[in-house]
Every structure is written in C-alpha cells, then in structure tokens.
Amino acid sequence: MIKRLESELEIACPCCQTTLVIDVNLGRVVSHREPDRGNKPELSEAQRILAAEEARREAVFQQSVESEKGRGDALSRRFEEALRQANQEPITKPTRDFDLD
Image 1 (spheres, helix red, strand yellow):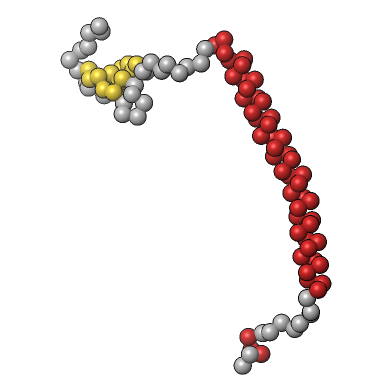
Image 2: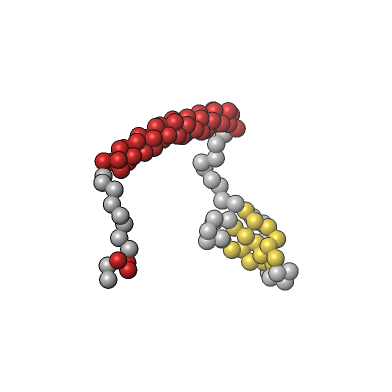
C-alpha cells in the first residue's frame, strides 16, 4: 500500500474509472492508475488482427467499387426512360401567372 500525504486526494474518474491522485497544495495530478482492462489483445494476435482488418477494408472497398460501376448504368437507364417519356408527352405552352388573370 502506498502511503499518501495528507494533502493528497484519491479520486476515481467517472468516465474512464482511472484513479487520480491529486495534491491539493500543488493543485495538480501527481499520479494516476488506469483500471485493468481484460479485453486487451495479445501481441501475438497482432498479425491476425491486422490481416482481418485489411480483409474487411478490402471487402468494403470492393463493394463500393461494384456499387459505383452499377450506378452509372442505372442512371443512364433512368435518363433514357425519362427522355422516352418526355418525347411521348405533348408540347404545351407553359402557363404564366399573369396569363391567369
């Protein structure tokens, strides 16, 4: 057990649960201790984790590329359909506000 001075306060951070030791006389944090986190990955797992992340990024990128390739075709089909529909409609003179009076 570490002996604390009378001017030191030990406080737990409400956000991250880190224990802070604050010296009242100095008005600053003199030490801190992070809580033990059990979900830390092992260093031996680093290569596997990086490979999995790279594969995930590549899959997302390929999906994005495929959706962009199909997007141009879909837009051109919609344009062709709109053009065909516009050619079938009769040409009329647009009404203006002062024509309605």
